[in-house]
Length: 197
Image (tube, rainbow, N blue to C red; front, side, top):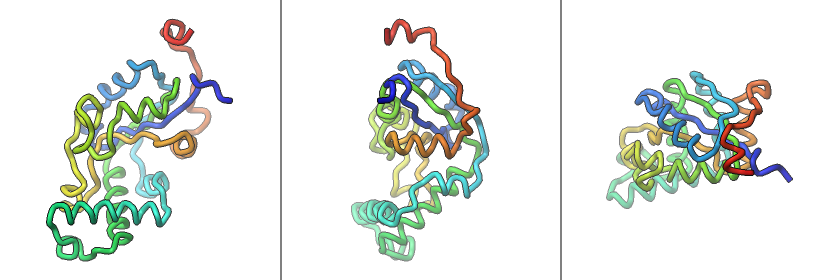
């Protein structure tokens, strides 16, 4: 069994977070919980690299389309008039293209955080993927109010400031996708003795 203190997760501060000068605040909030940074870099990702980061399974993309279709109906909008289709898979594919454009639109800061229950701890602090539904006190709840319906109407990805791995398996994939092994360091934070011993 892996030492719980060695669990790792990936955070991407997305282009809107970087451009708005939120990087330091986001990093500070995550570090204050006892999580430590073991890798960090700023990069301008290519669209192809962003595309490989996200799931490509038909079911996942179709599920994204179904969520968007539900938003159209809930808001009394006709998706055929708005985007030319009401087929969930096609809508999901459009949303994915907008997402790729958004994440590749500017520099991102890629970070590996390590610590006890890192994946779940970061997900709690980051908040709901949809900023409009994220609770106050979470990163997305405090720094974004975007919604899928607004993003779809403007034909763009939902600007939600940050990405966080959704599971250990996702984190393992994302660590290899964004970092070389030599970029990951090992050290002991000064407060680990107080917090975990």
